[in-house]
Length: 330
Length: 222
Image (cartoon, rainbow over the protein chains, first blue to last red):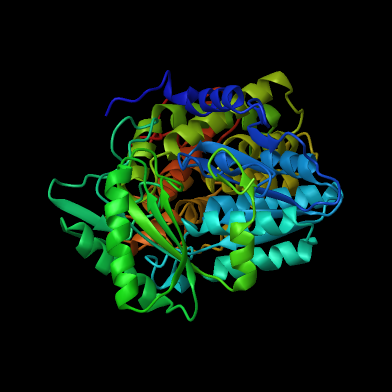
């Protein structure tokens, strides 16, 4: 796979310089690896900080702006950021109302964010933490590192971001984030392996004619391989896996997410199939988002995330947001 | 019993940086089988930063050297490996305090404290297919450095048939079996570098660190 890069070691820094050039409304600190709302800290507002390995764009840096994150900390490709980044971000966005860390549940992210939270608290910043662990493909999670954080992260960051923008205190913003996290379920399918710049090739071999069910967003292989399925068959399998884990008792937000290399044309076709299955199973969809939002470099494939919402969460979803990756209502 | 100073720790970590750089693509290859294909490049970046930091502002005691190295790894590696390897060195460094020289027995005890720190931070025990599988038998064998090297290599090799219960490989369930754990592999490199540093010291006539056999390991000889 040919990549549009200079040197593998420079990929993240180059992308940050490009983001700075494209988005003057953001403060992009290439040296310290931070993307911050330019008007931060907003006095009296809870600061929302997230981060993780690079390679999932627009997550997280593309979700910085009014109505969503105050700061994002990009790590190396598929590698969690280091504590210094989050400590610096917390200091930059603390408007006196405390800071919420939104952390995807991976061993590295959890360890680094925990170390950062301790350091930030030493500096006098009040920090709360919410884990996102929505991937139902991880079974017997008691015996593993636990469920991964994937597509549900977008819902957590948007809903908590809207609550913070509306002036909710830290405990309330954290409660919204926790509710959104607990109400989210995701399942992903790979049609190809991603290509990491460090390796310069695929991270797993997927023979022609096969797909991988239950993949994560880091090129880690999934749980099961099958002969290629149609979009309708993938939708049946995926929605069944989600509903078997949690049958919604109310309306849901639906994210039909591309992994990076699957065209929007295919994603919309897949969304039609997902909606067919959800209608058959009597699940009411309140809002739908289709596109490449929580990606895995150049992997082909998709994931589906359902997030059950009440009136409050739906109102927070509809609230204005103004970020490079998500923008409406303003 | 040999006395170890800041210079000894620095030589160990330089040897580790060389070993990690030499084997970076092998570590990444191992990681791509059951993880996310970045362990080699992350470790190479971190240990290169350790060497640079220690050259820039060398602490004068072994404990301080380990603490600075640990902090540098935490600030530069990222992923789980950063906090875990950083904690290994920092906890060992804290256990040594500020003494300008320590004997082999105290260094061994400090490294055991470091491994305890890793196990408690990561919640891992022997058999979970992690760094601990290589580190724990190695530090148990210290201060016999060649035995520690061999224990680390055997511990790493023993992760092949295991099913991962911690870290990213755990998501694979049974499909994680049949692969060498990349963290155990890099841990064996670190212990191998320690044995190299001890053997080099013994050859230089500084101490009697025991047989300088390279043990036929990839961690081996420089």
